Image 1 (tube, rainbow, N blue to C red):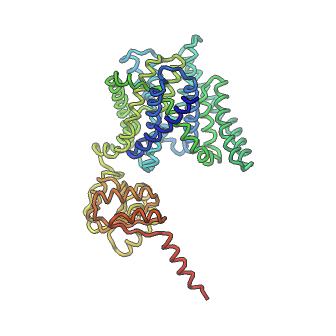
Image 2: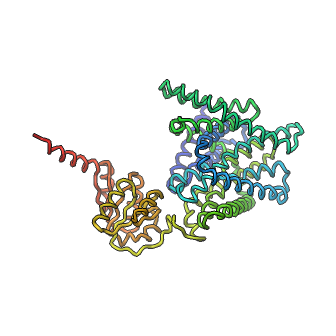
Image 3: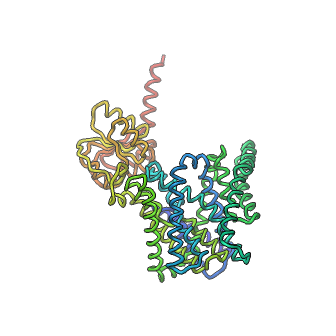
Amino acid sequence: METLLLAIFTTIFIATLLNIFFKKYNISHILGYIFTGTIISYLFDFNTLKIDSLDLVGEFGIVFLMFTIGLELSFKKMKKMKEILLLNGALQLLLSVLIFFPLAFYMFKLDITSSIIIALAFSLSSTAIVLPYLKQSKDSYTPYGKRSIGILIFQDISVIPILLLITFLSYGVAGANVSLLEVIVKTVLALVFIVLFILFIGDKVVDFLLEFAAKTQIEEIFLGAIFAIVLGMAVLMHTIGFTYSLGAFIAGVLIADTKFAMKVESDILSYKDLLLSIFFFSVGTKIDIVYLFSNLHTVLSIFILVTLVKIVIIYFIIKRKSDTNTAMKTALALAQVGAFSFVIFDLAASNQLITHDIANFLFLVTFVSMIVTPFVLNNIYKLSSYFQKEFFESDVITPIDNKNHVIIVGFGTLGKAVAKELHKKKIDFIIISDNLQHVLLARRINFLAYFGHLNKRPVMESLKVEECSSVIITTQNEYKKNIIAQSVKNYYKKVNIIIKIDTDEEGQHFKNMKNIDFINSNHELSSRLVELSLKYLK
């Protein structure tokens, strides 16, 4: 018991430290959990001891990983993106499988079953890493962001037939003497059954249960109903002969099309992160660092080969109807091997479709791919600019010729009001925002606006911060205000910064920095309210 408590404490402690460090350098927290699992497995000798509870934790994590993926896939969303999703997504998956299969079969001399599984797994990208980055950076509104999301959604949908295929292939290994054609036919029939179940039975049952739970107006009952649906669907699918994770995925898709989708997502947000961290922690426990370093050249060679193949495939698919820059950014964003490949390799190994040695090697290739991905995403504009610059330049803005201008950071409600006032007074100003929709709006009304982040040195150089009269920061986020102010000050100490603050604590913080003026919104507003009220005194 003491060892278990020590292991739990150490896990939480290491995960917290790693993620604080990774957050500072804008690296996905997923890698923090994977590294934690690897460290803990060596500290507590998980590599030599067979611990059934770890497999149970991993299975539980996979179930909720699949549920959260399904929750993002409503039929309404898929209909809106059907052209990008179906055409680009289907082409990417098909071409990837057609190239990876012969590479595995002829070049690496693997059997047909292993080659099929590897080809399918390598064709997937990491929704868990790429999608949060696109949302956080607001790149989900850019052409490359929309195309990336379309392909990711199609890949997530493809998880269903892949899981079914592995399930039926495992029957052949178990001695059922099933041919590949029979496996494909059974997979298609099972897929049809699942779609019909979703359309005609499952959605009505789920909607009824959530409606009933919501009417009680007790949060615990509604939350219990969600978990009951997920686990119940997982058990149902497993009883029929499929995997638990497939049932959880279907539960997510069913809930996504109900009116309770937003509430479910908000209610399970904290649980979702916890359960996903469990899954990635369990993945980390299977990483053999000693084997990685002893075979580093082989792992890196396969990783580079897979990455280059995916970049070429995705680039030419997107290039058909887009410019070079959009195609290259989409290819770079989706060039990694996805987190769900861990699930595929683990499931295949447990069903003896591939050997455990091959599975461990493929784990390492996927692991290296996921380590590199955050660095590629954080520098995606810089990397793509080597091929072609475009409108959505972000951190590679073409230098301007202005002097004595005002730089407005953000174009929300306050930013618009500031820009309107400066325009009325005929004062030269430039808008910089990390929200592409705001940039497009500003350009539509003929304001000079750029898409980017002022805390990046190339942006400050391009907008000539050292030549401006002042920088007005209108963003609401306290963390962003501080980062931008510190970065601008580090770049040019004499710059004049004006910030709207919302609390006295914020004011105290910025008071210690030179050449910073701030407006306390609460004080200014209260003074104005009192001033207006004086008119009515008798």
